[in-house]
Image (tube, rainbow, N blue to C red; front, side):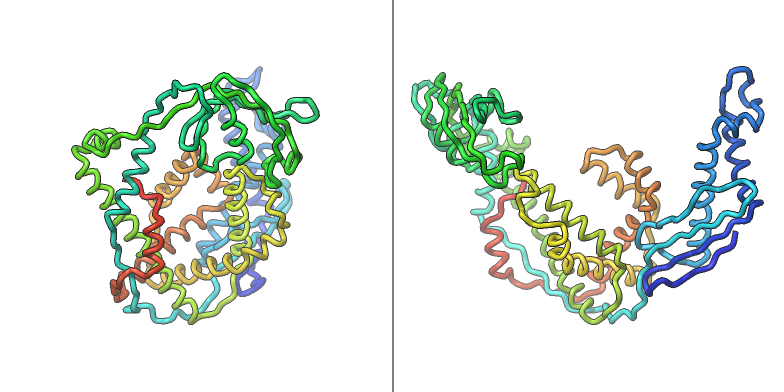
Length: 445
């Protein structure tokens, strides 16, 4: 195998590879031999099927596997010999091998740009102090009380009120026909929380248990079914029951139900500790970002196009998921893909520049990533997305994405190294943090 390297740009390499016919023959023969060993064909003993029969029967599979195996072998060999670290997936432009002929193909990928790192040791970093006031702890406790509230049926025959829970059936009709996808039985809904259309809740609050009524309702313009967005439908609702939320007392019993805590005082202590730990990590990340932004401003270098495009697509995908989780259609945003790409371009470029800067630090600090760390990263991703670890790892391997995972881990290690070397000064919390603390809603014990 011979190859030559072409510098397409300061951040992109193309490698032209030529494989002699003898190596092609050896690769095909090795793959065919593996098939011959395991294949079972009627009329032949296992492992004794003639090679000509095996190659004739499984030609497509043999040639495809032999081609892929040889290309992967060459990629690893070439990357190692040239001491390169691909930043993007490796694109392969190749046909299929032909017995008796030389095999030519190309691979291309992007690499880190070369630039001189600014001095990052002993830089000054300001990190905001974390403070917790009793009101923040009490807000968490109130949220726990709401989650543990007992739903007690209302015996009085009256319409429901805000703050109460109802059980209803509802179905939408259009031109006298049921609308597919807008029909639910025994649906439990909390009134007054803004989870439903105001006109929908208004209708519910005119009913008494056992009563059915209907009214015309206008669906929102961003309704997830774009064919119905902005349309009027006849909504028929049956109210089955009303339930009142009875909050538990703030006592040791509440602490036990919330997580087996021995007392309400211990529960408050755990809440405060959890808050301090999570806010400490957020403040540390914020301080690290400010330091990294300052260091990045001292250098300039070209950015690999595929990395920027990848970050843009990631942002668009995240926006789609969040939009649809709110029950709205992605199209309701009213922006074209081109407009979204332009919207996220600057942010994507900043993220890529951060990654490349940190990879350069990782190289200078001679940081490394063990296979076990890569597996741990994939396991976390598999767990958070509900996927099988082996299947997800296989996907990354088959699509040449293991380099990207390694780089992500290296970048995190490099940021920690910068933080370790920095002079960190703890400063009083800013007004902005105080405002965030006042609105804190996500702390869990």
